[in-house]
Image (cartoon, rainbow, N blue to C red):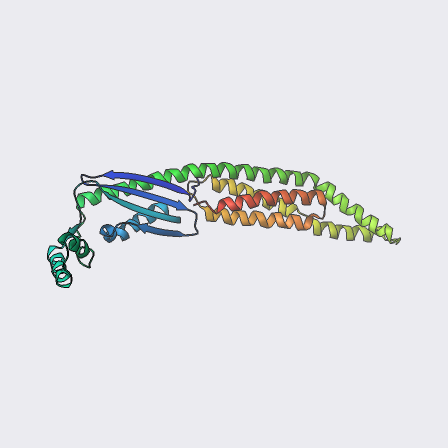
Length: 285
């Protein structure tokens, strides 16, 4: 079953003094393009988080965000009292002002606040890691649901191309007869008497030149292979893209050999369906 590269997952973890929100978004990309956003206290775990996400999502433009909200009395910033007192004393030497006003000025100076960086608690990290895994499962489910919609669209469009191919096959004898008549008319217009045997030889040459039997067979096989690959156990957008290129090659060759307006009209419709398939394939994992 195919998967889309578009996905979204979110989880919220509640701790005694903090709330952590985990969010993962993904869009289509040729390779894995991973961006992370998190508070500095969790930066030491970034490499591990990247490996964890890469092992689950494989491809796509992925944005991972870890949001931290302090809900209790815990704080990592403290007033650096000796520094603030020194600043206030220096300010008093400059200006005779109210201590409250001097304090307001002092806390704005460098190093007035100190930040204590605590190590990540092992139990807390285990819960965060489990939360990331849950979020990854959510985004994979999202991708699968999107993939089902894409699969349905692909099947419809491949069926449309196959139906158009059947119409091409049906009008092919009419096209060959049309080529034959045009050649006869061309000879008649120049009022030349021709050897019938020679004319038939030339006719066979031109008909072979316009023959699309091989292209019809190959196109039908490519369409079948596309559907077979679509229903395989793994999701391989690149493989489907290569098959799409082969389909396009056969359709283009039929169009260049058609030399018959009704068939060329069918070829244009095939190309239109194929272009829509190619656009959607960009979003398949």
